[in-house]
Length: 375
Image: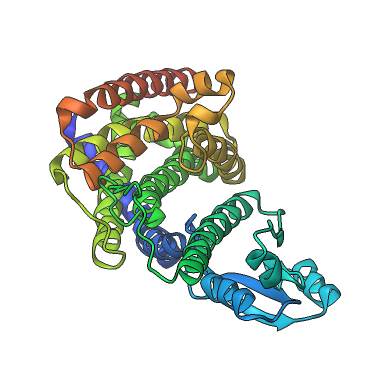
């Protein structure tokens, strides 16, 4: 039995690795994608391009502008008196927001009157717009407090001391609140799923296209042995990819790793059981490699959306939350982020492992049954 499995395994390794383009896809593409996604996938909003329209031109208005441009969140793209020119910058996406200060700003402040300061934000990207409005509100509130204290000091001739609440926030596991620390481990799980699905979904259908599947099955090899020989190389490739992209995350992006690498590999093993089973099922229902590729992407993108990689599962409709329970990527994201960022152990993650084991056994068993019936 093992000799027959090893024969299929060696054949599959030679078939996959003899093509230089396939070697690039297996070994080079995950690293390249990790680097690209690591920089591109981020929700941190900094250096917002700001157009400033200051019709007042007084020390108070310039101080307010300096508070905006002196922070890490806003960069002054231009200072102009032309309202239409500033709006054209937003229309052409050259600026993300306009800070407009009307004439009489300082005079009204000194008179104790409320002065409107307009912030026009490009709301096409609602997430960025929400952050920009919150940043602007915090900066304006700080400026108001400072101006009031200065006015009181000027009128009374003495410094003013006021009590205040000192909030001391502390973020566990991601002290700098870098979204990259959250998304890069998720990218690792996503790439492992994509590569294992692509390779497995085309493994058997490639034999069908070449006309060799019948020749193989008339040999003494049994279907289970054939499947093990076909899937084992892709499992090995999955572990190699895990090590490679994890090295990129640790050495290049400096993502913290606080847990056990052995526990991570255990999670990857159960995750691969599910993804290889899904890929095997896709291969049994596809007639050509093109069909297998299209079906793989048809499955992959909904799995990514339902996993919580981009959107929190709690924010989804209840029906989609239930649907996400059969998505193996959902559980792998919890495992990989827990191991990387929190350093938690099996006592915390055992429910995720149990879910992956149940999904993997169910999917692989169904795929093997389907493969046997197809033959």
